[in-house]
Length: 128
Image (cartoon, rainbow, N blue to C red; front, side):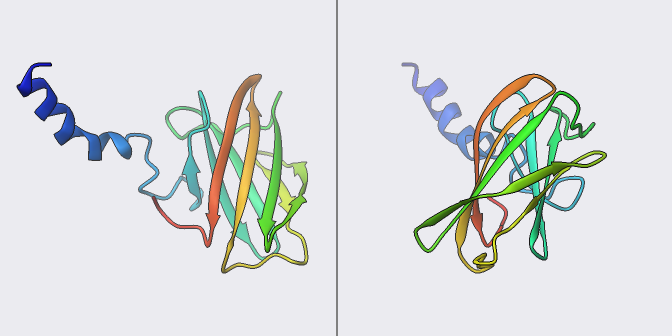
């Protein structure tokens, strides 16, 4: 491999790591991951999780032709959350055992027919 090309790639890796914007808050004040050809944005309010399914430009949240499955893992117990589609987002009820200081949320989503992988969010939520 050409040494100049190798050096260029090594220098670019830190910026490529945040190429999908996980280093800043999403348009609804939540935390963003990219599980596929779209972005998920998660925001916790009280005992609810709001999940926004955004396009590649972090816009146009939709619930149309979309689904989310969210699970919470805390203290070695995994709870599947009940989620309801609202106007532009999904609202999922956290279990009574929710601990805002530690745990993990796993979001599996389909946005407008496009299936994504698993997006993981560590609790407490923070920027990458």
